[in-house]
Image (tube, rainbow, N blue to C red; front, side, top):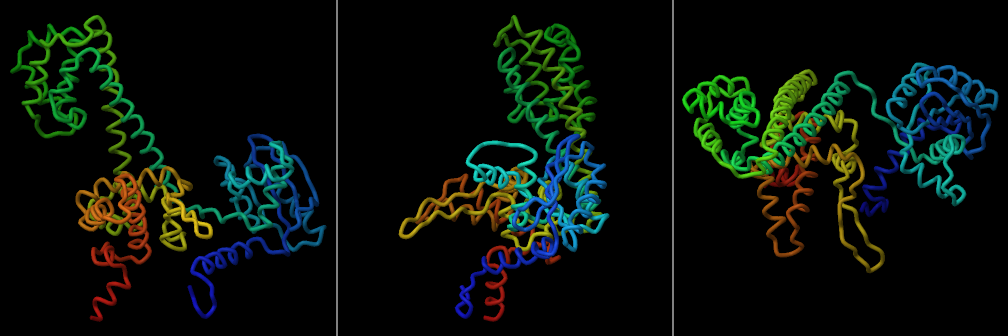
Length: 449
């Protein structure tokens, strides 16, 4: 707390944010609230007291809303306003099109969170009515109250990284589903195959051997038994190169060959289930190759942005993990502070206190779920290879006072990872263990001493 002004750091940040919004929503401009849909757009022109000055329904697509903005500007000028501020909810891709149309006309553009609109709709008349006409007015009213935000500025390179990140997430989901399906099928009809390797779905030799066996036999292992172990090893040696390995681990191939004689499992379903495993394994192979291609493209985008070395300087994170996080955040420089980025991910602590009551503190869980997931995945490498994160995790889970559960400590480390990634990119300095441990103030005091 600043003793001179009695204004907290949060107050200053809030005042700064409101100042930026007031520049975009000046009292001299009317507010154009638009409820976006597929082929029907409700447009209202309001003053700052939410009085509707004009209303019109445009039965056009989002990219044809230029005429609607020109109409709204004319109505605002007739009412004595110097300009307009365009506001909408971030619906699908349409809000980006509307933002571009507004920018071409020199109009300010802001967005209103759908969740805030939903709360305001209930408080409007204590009903659950939802109509395009009402929603457009609510959007304009929330904008007048500055309960809106400035959307991310579209950048071609950062936008490409975001799309590549979305593609990678889809492929990871497919790969996870395929692994689970193969595991479930094998546990039913050939469980011994899963014991041929310690981590079968990480072993390219296991995958290649399964591919050879299933392509030859389907569910009947007679052909592979007749083939013999030596010839099977030769086929696996060729196949494993296609899976990206230089040479196979023949111990795993021999274990799978020995498992051909095992009769465990539901034999009546073996042939059909193993045929299905072959289909899923082929899908897994192609999805894995597509994922590698996307990750190479994401790394190349980081190089184009000039942040690859900075982002990958965090030990244990790597360029792929950093690219996955940055694909969700966009340019970290657009956030006013590292804490704002953590809030965007929903990893900021949520305080619960009133008077003498102090409740249990949890993370907010709001914000961008994909960013939370990317940060959570990123810490698995840093907990193993980053001494600062490993020590912090050990301290949080083993201290006597206010000891955290493993999942709570992981959330705290994930938030720290986002703060540190924001710092290295904004400052342009690689990750530093001393700064990550003590912060910049602690480092200054240490140097001075």
